[in-house]
Image 1 (tube, rainbow, N blue to C red):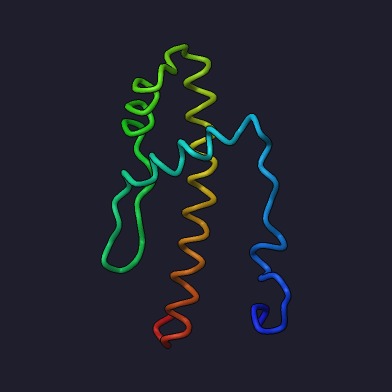
Image 2 (image 1 turned 90 degrees about the vertical axis):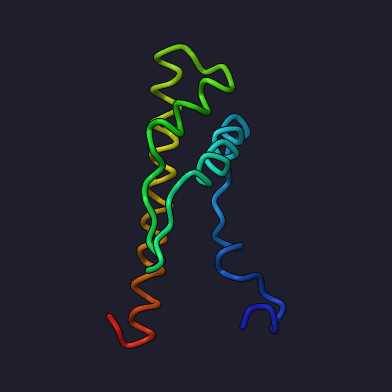
Length: 99
């Protein structure tokens, strides 16, 4: 195990760099992500358009082009999040003999 031998875990050593001008988008994604629904099975829904729109209204993203870019960035982050969640579910199912 990486912690035992002094090496950084793979997730930390392969962590992507986030450009400074996109930190606010990642922070917004983290906040908006709390609006999603989770299922007993472990799956979850996408972030709704209305949740992104509510956030944009709250924080003054009112120009259509700015909102479209913001929505596309949040959607891209959400797609990665959902893919990761799906992979974790499949791995759990395989480990328990259900997949």
